[in-house]
Image 1 (tube, rainbow, N blue to C red):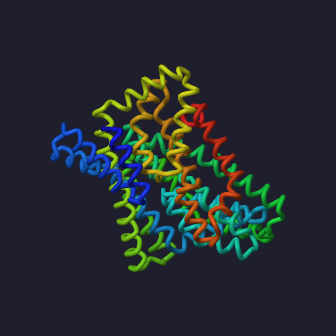
Image 2 (tube, rainbow, N blue to C red):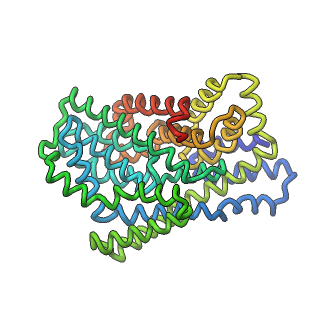
Image 3 (cartoon, rainbow, N blue to C red):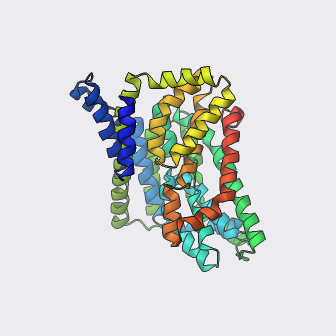
Amino acid sequence: MTAIMTGLFAALLAISVPVGYALIIAAGAAILWQGGTPTVLAVVKLFQPTQSFPLLAIPFFILSGSLMMSGTLGQKLVQFAAALVGRFHGGMGQVTVVGSTIFGGVSGSAVAEASALGSMLIPWQKKERYPAGFAAAVTATIAGLIPPSIPLILFSTVANSSIASLFSAAVLPGLMLAGGMMIVCYLSGRIRNFPRLTDAGQLKSFGRSMLSALPALAMPFFIILLLRAGIATPTEVSVIAVFYALLVSLLLYRDLTWERIYAALVGTVITTGVVMLVIAASSLVGHVLITERVPTIVANWALETLGSAILIILMMNLIMLVVGMFLDLPAAILLLGPTFVAIGHAIGMDPIQLGVMICINLSIGLFTPPIGTTLFIGAVIARVPIGAVVKELWPFYIVAAAVLVLMSYVPALTIY
């Protein structure tokens, strides 16, 4: 049954069937072929995971991010980042890194960040005589780990882990990735003599821009504080975040319009629909895998064949790197999560560390060919071939791999 499902899924992907539909068709065909599961039960399995209270956090976090970043606040964030690092070598690239790190604490989605920031910053970098491939590469490397992170919410549903603990654990690796990317931008700018924003570091300008961007800067800390203190659940925090975004736009920046609200609602519905379709489809796939005890069999095989936890973690990372090249991040988390949670439990790996490792690894797939979502977004906005962007990405791959290795083998960096 699993072999039929896997083969049909690969064939459907090869003819460009969307991932959610491909998963449903492949899993449905496998269930019908096996014949042991009633059709009604299969339909229930399909819709059951979408009826989850914690998953309500996803559309509300998407909506709050869309409301905040579609208005004046998005421009204020860019101005703050420019005042903070624009005067250094490779400053324009560093502005993108800082902006995406802050944006991650608002939207929770790497794809949303790449689209919104890329449309603002890639043309700006090109205007300042930065190579178009480099501008697209910096935009593509957005990881989306800073809370609220939608991938971490999805992993929490797979592993039955605390969303608050995952959010807290992701802050340090998110900052490490940002720091490493900024070093790459600095060295590239210094070696290749990229232009600098010479007046961007003035103290007065920095203070004014920081105050203007403070509502967005405070969002990640606000979310973690409410969750860690037990004041509100993740879903309740996401609703509070929407009211926060509305109040900031209405009272502070006074740029809230019905058109913005409508556009944010439409975008939220579309994005949530895509995510929920994949969640429903993955539940059906999970039913097939659990029926044939695939996670347990794979975990036992890994223990008996590899033996060492170091080698097992390496195997998981290699598998995820390959899968991440072809599947979008949410689908990959939901498909690989149950099996890797079983393997992690078998080797004594904390699920919080495992969740951060999985999200970092699969985030690399977002800017890795042949099917990297943020890679394509950056290339399209910059109007350059994919090859030109990939050529600029090699030092960023090294940074991402180094952080991934640290998160995989040093539990203290995620469990505290």
